[in-house]
Length: 227
Image: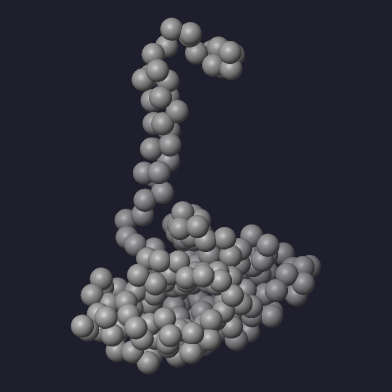
């Protein structure tokens, strides 16, 4: 009866009905596929399946993401680049007012100079409080974007200030930031930080892990990969 109310004739074949509902889903899925893998590769070293691949989902204005970064960075530095690869994905949480604009800044800077992306991430982490909800409550969106632009220039240099401003007007950077969020959702991410190792989700998502915990996870895998 519901189908009839929607204007579908009772004699419509089941196959046609199936296509009516499935085809739009396929088109939507295809539109989400990006030309290259999402995320920022640490030290510009392409992630290889010959290495242990760590993927982290961070929100630049999330305190737990901030606290999770130093031990993860320390752990990655402990191993050779031939052993471990790291990719960070932005996942702007909707209840952090400035998560999207700071995440977008990372995409913009990555386009200008990919060597400066992690520098900007650390700048955001070190000066995170200025972009908390309460601190920018009475600021206009334009004012916040200007503040973020000035911070981003610290990572790539003042000479790129114009390019950063242009980046915030470029729809491609907006779509790239949205795509990263959608990608996280497709992986089951619902908070930050979230971590995957070789494609497998680590438990306790949304909480930082200390250096020793990272070592306890990665050491056995490095040993097995060399065996």
